[in-house]
Amino acid sequence: MVKEFYLNRKLDHSISSELKQEALLFIRKTVLADFQLQEKILSKPLPNYHNIPPKEFISTLQELIGSDLTLDKTINSSDVISLPDLGEVLHKRPPSAKVFEEEKLSFNTFNSLLTNSVKADAKDNYRRPYPSAGMQYSVEIFLGLFENKIQDFQRNGLFQYHPKSHQLHQISEISFENLKTAFLNDPEDKAILNNTNIYLFYCLNLNKALYKYLHRGLFFSLMEVGSIYQQMEITTRELGLRSRVWGAFYPNIINRLTCTHPTTIIPVMCQLIGHSK
Ligand SMILES: Cc1cc2nc3c(=O)[nH]c(=O)nc-3n(C[C@H](O)[C@H](O)[C@H](O)COP(=O)(O)O)c2cc1C
Image (tube, rainbow, N blue to C red; front, top):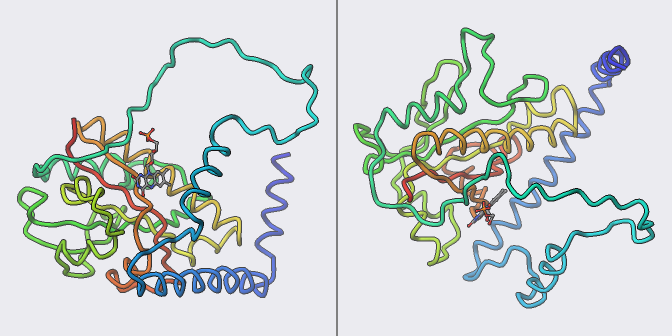
């Protein structure tokens, strides 16, 4: 089985570059179409991404999540196995933060957060705290950092984190007001967005993602984002902080603010970190 896998992998590498080009072009076209859609939405006063009437949206959603979906409608009851309820779980994940308090984050805590969540370990073959498909590490991490949110930090803007050198590279000098334009303007979100200490943006680097595994590399990279935000969540809690994964932002604005091209660097998820009880 293992041998077969490696044989297939060899075959994968011998796949013509035409096919790679095709996969890359297809994904780039799709991303570009989404980028254009976002631009259109932004030019209207009330964004409605899903374009489904709210009532219909809620009832469909309730139907989808209200009970376990039986995909095989013809399943026999003798093929259904009920598992005994153990009552308690080994590890209960605390709820995502709903609001943050206005309190600066110490620089040491900030450093510890990156060290324990994303830094590459030079003493261990540059392994990282999260898994990566084929060790490609195709997710780029950008951070929105501001002087009024972190102690002993005198800069404002967007930074790229470099996991091997454990460095932050400032890529644009922007105010918090500028960064806010990347988030949906929902008044209910202000309590969490305004008091967030660190704004993390996880972006796929398509050049890295597709290199080994073509379109599957794209899926693998998305999973890597999930692994990173879970690792970040674990560290966050250990440091007495809280977090919330946040999809409600405009990727095209992050591309603009980070001066990156939307068909190479795809911002897929944001994570907010701050103080909360
Ligand atoms: C991919 C992803 C995107 C999310 N985006 C948002 C978001 O934009 N706004 C928000 O309030 N919560 C967001 N969340 C958090 C979920 O709403 C939250 O995890 C869910 O309500 C379950 O609550 P719990 O984490 O407290 O169990 C997101 C979570 C994930 C995994």
